[in-house]
Image 1 (tube, helix red, strand yellow):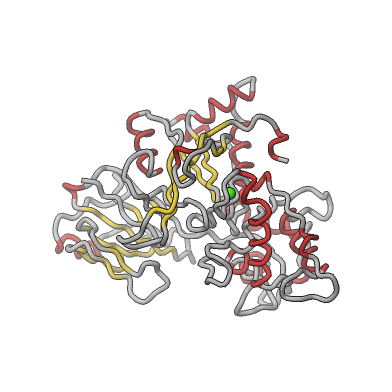
Image 2: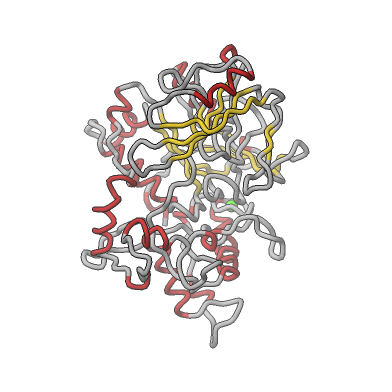
Length: 440
Ligand SMILES: [Ca+2]
């Protein structure tokens, strides 16, 4: 019996030999885990979920509950590996006889180390820009579906939205154009002019999930780079205020895009940065990894996934680029997902994995479910190739319907429309980008 578990909890780990206690067989054994002796960790609660129905209550969880789960023991605890630490965790333990001997982990959203612009561009204008960008670049891929298949080919001219005279609701003032341009370009070190982080893609500004006038389900930059509760400062200024500079009176306006970057790297970079392209130890243990990234991600810039993948490839020993690509693809494959925002959602086909939130596919097999594709790769040596992603008319519910499907292609391949019904993945091929000109 499969014990795949739904996403959306902060940390979710099914049983793993070596790091977890034996799976409980009864409700009493489950509850008794509260007294379990662990090094540097305490089990705060252990609740048997016998009927497979989990209520998460009136919280920010979406949805606020799950049903149809296998019986399991829900364990919540606190880990304190070093003095002063306080790391909450949750473990779902399946019945021992049902355990597949697979571990499934879900991490919570990382604390991003980025300074961002003040709300110089109002939220409604971000949507205005996104709509204009999509209108400009949607058809570059041959299909008018509200999705920019490859934003690298989109070169929207912000000046086309420039206000003829004074600032207004349907145009951009010069300062707003300047702010937007900087977001697309990414921050540079003021001393060396070198890139600190890649820029954001066209289409990530305000993720447009509906027609104009309808409510847009996803906020884009407005949820991450500006703070609706404190509009005079960026969303995560407290990260720098307390974690980096340890100063409640720290003034984010005085951030220095040079020396302060050094302070960040020195003080917390060694703890927070997960950017090393050296995966040789992982590879040597026959590890397999699938990465995916939404092309419209407003949190992490989409190109950063490609940059990381390319950096890993550059560490391969092959003497030709083709050799290095093959060596890398033997254990690491990247899928760029058109029209997807941060990990899920967006105007594109974004349902392709039970291993992440809001992405449950319509079919449970290795072509529709990236999690199963990974299992096939690890357990049977069958590497994933073209996968299928699905766009539903709504995110949840048994009455949802498929709107269209698209192939997900192994980077550096991209999907290309070949003709035929545009709602069918079979109308698209995964092709190589012939040369850099195609990206212009
Ligand atoms: Ca399109």
